[in-house]
Length: 311
Image (tube, rainbow, N blue to C red; front, top):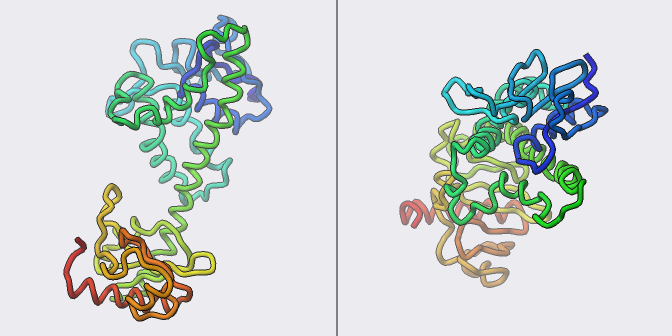
């Protein structure tokens, strides 16, 4: 069946139908987005996908609302919004449209569901209070997207529709960036795993470029690794490895004597020609060549073994 219309409600918009529109518009680029509550439009029929309106959920009929009772829920009883329902039924096709490798489809579909779709669904259903983000609440995606709605005293008849159209490419950018990074992380994982195998028992992991590495290090159980070395533009980087994703604490810090130094002062402190910079936080340093970077990393390992765990 050819889809000619993507139908959602008019008036003020929320993140769920906006993000649903991102998915559907990618799959059906020739379809027109219709924002209405007209009964004829929100009744299932030929060539339509209806979402976040219509008070019914019937995938075969092409209607995906969640406001009715009983409302659609996941196996763990967490509620769907229209975004979750659209992702459930169209997410894999959307990933294919973004040229995600077939081998990664299921993993990325599930990961995006958990990290991106579910929070939107919970917020839309009132099952999660945005205040859980504390002072970052105004920066949560749901609130940022809804901040694009017209101000209260813009009374023009097309204000909501214009705002929705303007918000759509912004929402699309967030969705596509998230998925692109998930796909890139999987590509990086294979490269990092090979580098770990090549490193053997060394405490230094050398990578061909800057890339996400911590999850692959954890997955392979490479607890012996302390520092990562890789080229960065015309220089080389020497970086620490965080002990967890939600902590700035490193497995080992760079030597305290290097902190905040650069150029000649850093060369004198570490004895390595080509040493260029060490951050005050001792989590990253820069050298002008691979040889200098490897030497600095070796010195940092020796210091870490002598002084024990990072401060």
